Amino acid sequence: MGYDGKFRDAVRFVFFLMVLLVLLAAVEGCNSPDNGKTKVQPPLGGVLLKGAGATFPSLLYRKWFAEYHNSHPDTVISYEAVGSGEGIRRFIGKNVKEDDKVDFGGSDAAMKDEEIAQVPGGVLLLPVTAGSVVLAYNLPGFDGDLRLSRKAYAGIFSGVIKKWNDPIIVRSNPRKKLPDIYITTVVRQDRSGTTFAFTNHLDAISQDWHSRHGAATLVNWPGNAMRATGSEGVAGRIKQAIGSIGYVSYEFAHNLGLKLAVLENREGKFVAPTADSYTASFKNVVMPGNLRIFIPDPAGPDSYPIVTFSWILLYKDYNNPEKSKAIHDLFNWCLLEGQKFAPQIGYVQLPPDVVDKALAALDSVTQTAAGHK
Image (tube, helix red, strand yellow):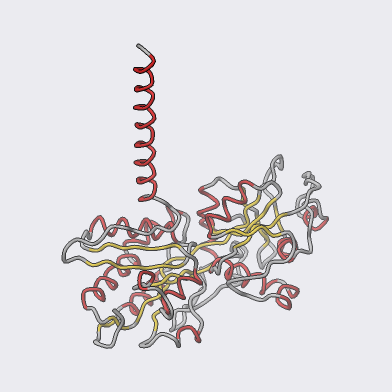
């Protein structure tokens, strides 16, 4: 083969690679885990439901919405995992671009009364799942489970405990060698329900944290903090940064194979993040009439200390009967059939009494001429 023939073959090969890369990028875009946004339009006569919000439950939502669409092809659900704060902003709808307006929101911090007051017609806070916030860490060479007392992990995220071989950490890990290196905390830089759940817990167990920071969706973190966007971003940073520790929902840490700290609970017991310890944390919860409850420091010797419900935010009125029915049917399915998927992915199956109250509230969603489009 002459030079011209080899050159033509090389050009064809390069062209083939370019086409292949474009196709792979297109496939990756359709299946990207970044925000779960669906680009597909509903079929003729079908309904498109748009949602946005919390990253904490997004893996479960992705599973739910795919399963529901498979059995209800006329309903297409798009959900962007943009964080609880942004989800609430889009749900309220003021100064929001038309493309960013939603039919439902998602939040691990529910909504404050002043936020609810901004929504004409009212808001329904629907608890649909629950889960845990874990402390994942990156300490190569450290053998066994890292045990952190309440004083230890509150001190780490307050910036008071700066090194891994601090005596307060060593005290709970006898006969284990902790490295003489600085601690880097990995935290959220976006408004986050996961941040709220974690800081709500710190607020309950640490007077120092309570006096300086309190519970919030966005915190000016003290100490040596590395910031990331979304639960996936935090988990990824922890995996890369030696000497780091960060708070993240269990399922994202588990998916990356991160090591998880064993934490001291309210009863002074060190408890690992497991399905049984999560379930124990929600055992005695009594859901109030407005379905908004937080568990900053669950009681019980078997309870894991950092847990939260996650809510879907619904308008009480929709002015589109097809959309109103589709919303009702979707989340009715999530509260009943969908619950079986929660433990498979790392979330908590809701207690039966919570499901009953949520279903009763869901039935109050109506359709009127004055409702939301």
